[in-house]
Structure formats: structure tokens, C-alpha cells
Amino acid sequence: MAIPEHHRTNFQTLLHAAMDGNLALMECLDAVSGEPRYVVCAVGRSGDEYVFTPFGHLHQGDPYAAYVPPAP
Image (cartoon, rainbow, N blue to C red):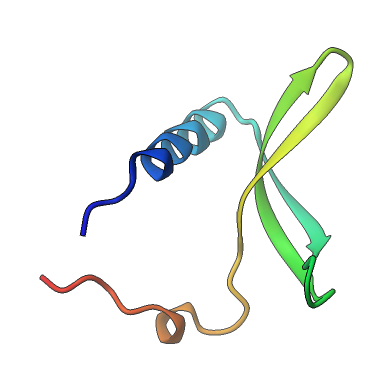
């Protein structure tokens, strides 16, 4: 299964933000459940304002139980 190009682009953006020290971990609320989520964000600027672009949240519980790795 090939990773879609837009995900590859977002991953590169995330890597660049990490290399530049422009990542943040923010506590947010899930828009559907209202549960707290800890969200990895890239930090940018727009004029005098900071802009936080969410990329994903940290998994609650055992991440090894939540995902099945690709077949070899």
C-alpha cells in the first residue's frame, strides 16, 4: 500500500518543524467526544500571531494494541 502524497508532504512539513524547533504539544479537546487529546502541532507565524497546525494526537493506552503493522 502506497502512502498518499499529501501525507508524505505533511510528514516532511512535520520533520522541518522539528528540525527548526517549531513543534508544540498542546492539550486540546476532541471535537466529537470532548475528551482531552494531546496534539502534536507545527508552530508558525502570521504577522504578530502564532499559528498552530495540528498533525495528530498521542495515542491513549497501548499503541501496539491499536495498530497492525504492514505485512512484510
